[in-house]
Length: 128
Image (cartoon, helix red, strand yellow):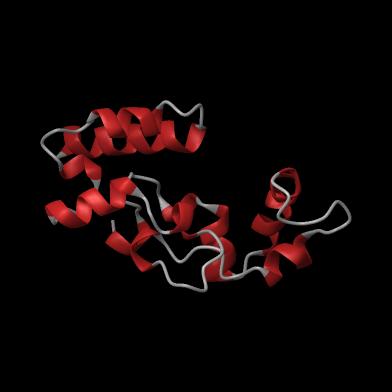
């Protein structure tokens, strides 16, 4: 998988609505994120897909964060990505200490995306 299309944590950008909105201007993906954006306070109660699209670029991928990205993976300060950069690896799954305590905390955040990312990296390790 292209480094640009997989986050250091193992999230597959090709499956991410925010990445698709940015890279493909995908209105269907924006529609699917309306409730979440409202719940986070990023758009108003009466706003919809148009408001989300105005925030683009939402995400250009973990390895291509720029100042104009809305998401920036927690302000561009993702410890997992920083660790991968320091170790000169493409993703956490390439690390001999995977899954480390920091990654386990990330995967245990009751977030299906994070759990799926860990499963993805585990499968890459077993298929290598």
